[in-house]
Length: 198
Image (cartoon, helix red, strand yellow):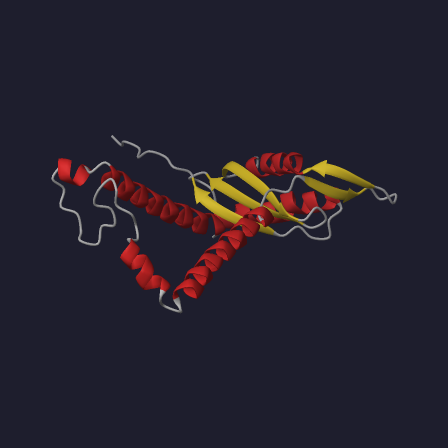
């Protein structure tokens, strides 16, 4: 979900910046006159010396009492939305280290990437699984797994999922001394070309 939201936001920001950049370039170099382009009447830049707001427009907007509060509120809202998006990105990053209770009162710090690799190897070795990818998130003492299983054409999805939960994740919980290891599992089918018969 977050990945899709990120893609949409980045795409919208990219389209907006490209459109703004094109407007500035076309207007500042006078390309619409050189190339004979018919631009919309609301096009902000018509020549190299044009500005976004003329002096008359600046005076007109400055005389309105609501102008500056609206501009400041809009900029504050954009800033807060950008900060909230940045915080969400920081919270959803990969788990770098995992704290494991050694059983004798001490704790052992395990690299998150090492546990990801072990989980991916064990999940990838399951019958019917063509490839497995694991990403750990959450907190150091309460990790969460995101697992993507690419299933072979002959695989039974229910059986692969059952073995993943009963064998791979259970063994990971036991070996890491975790009370629970929540997992989000995505199943995909391996892409293969059509077979020619006859």
